Length: 335
Image 1 (cartoon, rainbow, N blue to C red):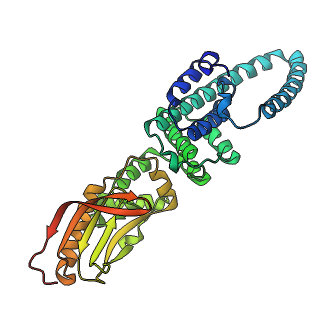
Image 2: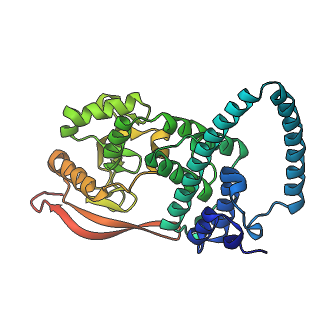
Image 3: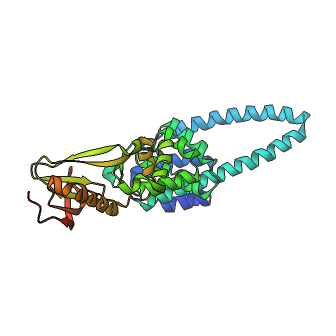
């Protein structure tokens, strides 16, 4: 196999360098996506592709035949009106240059995103991105002229390469129309998430934060329910209630069978998919807020004795709570 870094234009060698060290299934998916997105500007490393070479050659031959016939028709028209042909060529070159430049920026952002977070090989889904999904994605990527949108589409494609089907077509259509105001509101609110919920404290039931929640509900990213939604928790046989996020959680102690409800606003499917493009949630602060809510609203009547903050870890298929600190204790409570 020829060295792609020698035979490719600068973007090719840059991508080869950035993609080096990625797990093989990720590299395979990346180069296939890069070939679809960037096209002839990139020499795809053949050893990473599964498609037989003859299929590529057949497709190329068919494209060449169509191209020749179009060229012949254009030549006939140009003979009678050369000026319109010149204008059309200038317009086409400008437009295609813009689109190609945007797509190349997106694929570089994709490679950088994949490199920033190397996937655990055991979590990689060895499937191909669907053609329909990629067709829609290419149209949005070629119109991404700002650095913000190029990086956004890079994160989307990286996520889809890691796990095909991760982002629905409705989600990428939504992202293409997402305005800066809504994006900033959602990023602020999403920092407060505990898995699929936003703790709906009394302080968040009014004021600017509540207004943002309502706007995000209108956008289809949250279910607020006027603050009436909640999740129920019941203490187990050991008298323990667990409320856990991705990295941190609460372990609160009360008599067996104790029930409490915690008010939440819930992320929709659209909201959850977009959260995968955002920085991790600030779970530590949220865990402490929920803990304070339990102590203030339930400790006396429900006889809670104490609450602890801990780190969540997965061992095999089991979720483990590892205590970090005691958040509060009610030694005078009679359990």
